[in-house]
Length: 223
Image 1 (cartoon, rainbow, N blue to C red):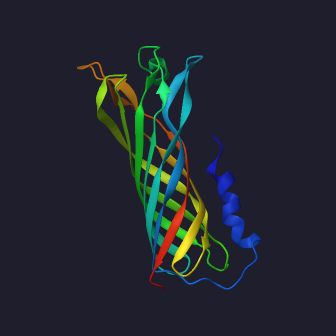
Image 2 (tube, rainbow, N blue to C red):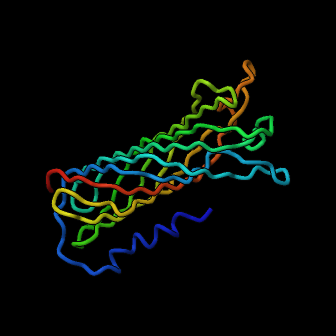
Image 3 (cartoon, rainbow, N blue to C red):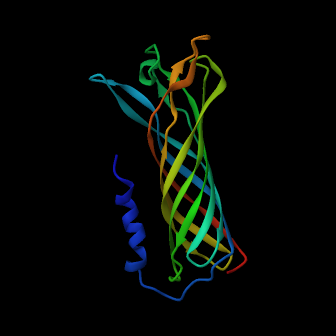
């Protein structure tokens, strides 16, 4: 998968390539709410020459965060998101018996925290970069597979990314884009030896996910 540093580099260079203007006011707190798109690597697709290949699915959901700014350039972020999808697989696609197509109802939730670095010396845009850490939970159900109760797996997650805001006034900013590379290590699907139903009982493996968000940021107080 393409290294996240390749798409983070232009973002981090923005302060040097965009003309400077008067510095912006620094809010004490920022609350973001918006919509999110994810490209999720949540399962193994199939065996090819004896090796499992990754399969990506698209998810749509929500994204929210609360940032407390210590000064004009560094703050602490509490970041939350939930993405939902309904991919179709065969049993063989996910390492289970069977070739009949099935639908899996999937949802992924992240609860992350970490530092954010913001450049506020331009009047028209505000670029930022961040490194976030915390738990993530993957939940799934499928009547086609007999999973009537939701099954889940939890793993530690790391998110590296950033974005660009466009100030509208002292209190409201539009988040033009936020893009994050999110690494998780969820367990693989397996079969419960007692019930024969799928559960997340397999080995942990690395998932490389991408998340893109847009929305509105509300500012409170000042530094």
